[in-house]
Every structure is written in C-alpha cells, then in structure tokens.
Image 1: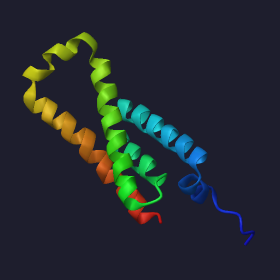
Image 2: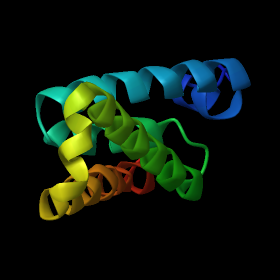
Image 3: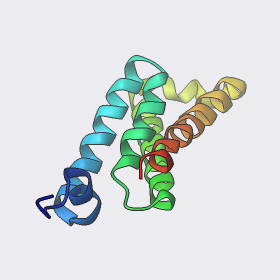
Image 4: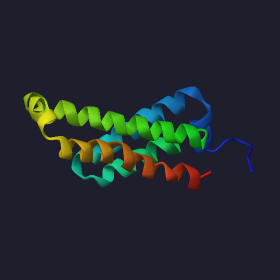
Length: 112
C-alpha cells in the first residue's frame, strides 16, 4: 500500500474536503428528495457517509432532513399559510422528513 489515505478517509478527517463533501451530499440529497421520497433516504445516507463517526452520521442525516423540510416549506410559498390547518398531512411530511434520512444514516454504520 502506498500509505496515502483513501478519499473517504480524507473526507472524514480533513476539514476542507469534509465540508465540501457534506454540502455536496446534502445538496444532491435534497435535489433527489424533491423528485421522489426515496431521495430522503439517499440524503441521509450520503450525508452520513461523510461523517467520521456513526453518531455524527446520525446528526448529519437529521441535518439533511431538516434542510429538506426547509426547502419544502420554502417551495410552498404563499400556500404555506394553509399548512397549519392540514395537521395529519403535516405530521406525515415532518415524520418522513426526519425519519427517512435517519433510516438512510444506517449506511454509515454499515460502511466503516
């Protein structure tokens, strides 16, 4: 072996590649989530793979979920005023927005 760290090791340990990978993973995940709900799982998986530990991977996945929920709320625009009256739908949206990325963060536990 050459002794140089792999790309994944560099992403997890060096600050600049870590930040770039985390922002890119979150952006790709949110873009995928805007097309299909499975993108939320991908967002959590991609964000957590950049994490140095499993615990931080879970936190990054939650961050990706919150980011996707914020993007969804912004995309509603003026219709956001009607959201409080749609409680069951809101519960499903928030639950999926937080739960599915957490499910995706299992990828960090599987890929050491």
